[in-house]
Length: 91
Image 1 (cartoon, rainbow, N blue to C red):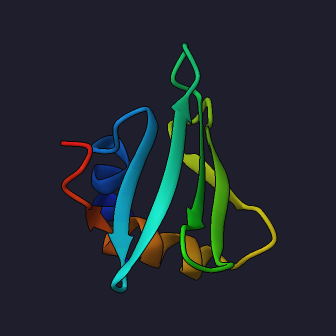
Image 2: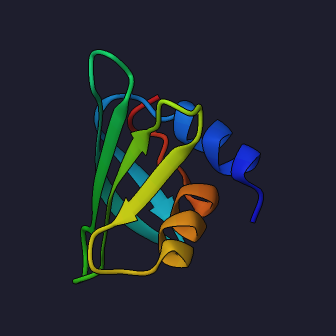
């Protein structure tokens, strides 16, 4: 998956709580960016099930980024961020 696509999808996320649809299921998503923009974190929970998605993203001084999923694969995080859409209730 393309890092540019992931970054674009992540930058389009509103801060705070929203609800999103991923693979036909509604997720509650909490997304925060630090004041200096160097750290972002996301926690999402399937509102009708047990699935969660959680990660921290750190901006490095070199201009790169370090994605740190919480007890799940990088692929799961990327697929979630690239694959979800607005539920329509928060826009």
